[in-house]
Length: 115
Image (cartoon, rainbow, N blue to C red; front, side, top):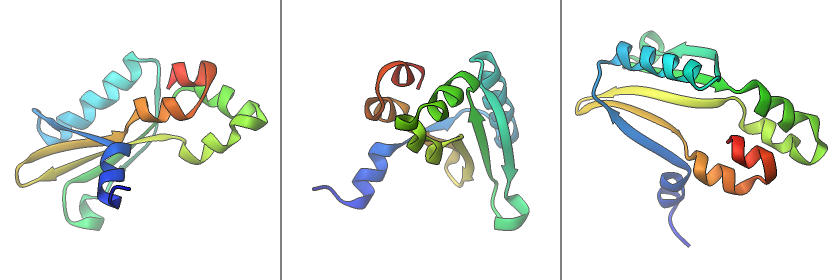
């Protein structure tokens, strides 16, 4: 069995942004809307944490409705909404989010396809 770090690296995916911190956030918000998802929460932790760190929470209405309307899918609500973190590090701007491909494998049918 792998280490906790190995498991986290499988569950979370990260990319380096080629844009500045604020522009990265704005581009993520625009892309979310283009994909018919909605930004339902935006948190900027610069003052509270002391580093450029923000979180976007996004949700797809159709997915959410299907997930919580069937008893067998309600456990998914603990993972909603989907979160993306944006953080500025000395070597660049990073965006992290859940590995949706891996998550989709955990759920079946139409929900897996939407995820």
